[in-house]
Image 1 (cartoon, rainbow, N blue to C red):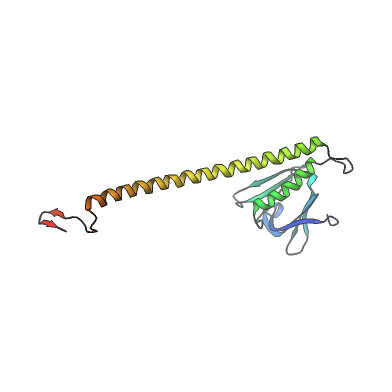
Image 2 (image 1 turned 60 degrees about the horizontal axis):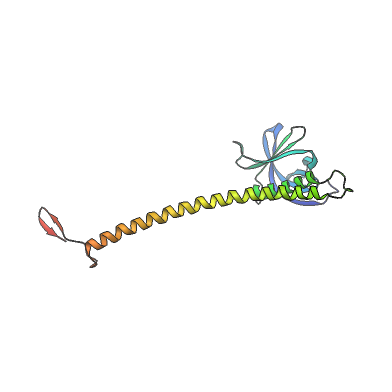
Length: 184
C-alpha cells in the first residue's frame, strides 16, 4: 500500500480484538486497499486489499453506537468507529471504491464492456433510489406531524374565537355570578 496513492484518510478508532480495546489512529484508503495506523506509533495494525473484502456494513453494538465493519474472505471482521466527519460519509466513500473494484474487470487491460457499465449504473441508480425513498418517507412523516400540529393550533384558535365572541370585544372578563352576587 505504501506505493499506492492515498485517496483519503480519516481519524477513527480500530477495535483490537485480542486486547479487547479501541485504538485511536487513521484509516487510509487507496483505490485498491484499506490500512489502519495508530496515532501513537504510526504502526499499521491492519492493511488489506479491497479485493479480499466480502462485506462492508454500518453497524452498532453495545461497545459503540455507530461503526463500520469490514468482513474479509477469511471471515476476519474489522471494526472502525469514531469516524470523522461522520460514519455515513466514510462508509459511502469506502463502499464506492469497493463496488468499483467489484464491477471492474479482473485485468486492467480489458476494456469495460457496455454490459458492465450498464450494470454499474443500474446498481448505483438503485442505491440512490432507495436512499431517496428513505429520505422522502422521513420527510412525509415530518409533514404529517406538522399538519397535525397545525390542525391542533387551528382547533385551539377556533375555541379561543368562540370564547372571545361570548365575552364580547371589550377586553374585560365577563361578569360571573357567585353566592355573594355578581362580580367582574
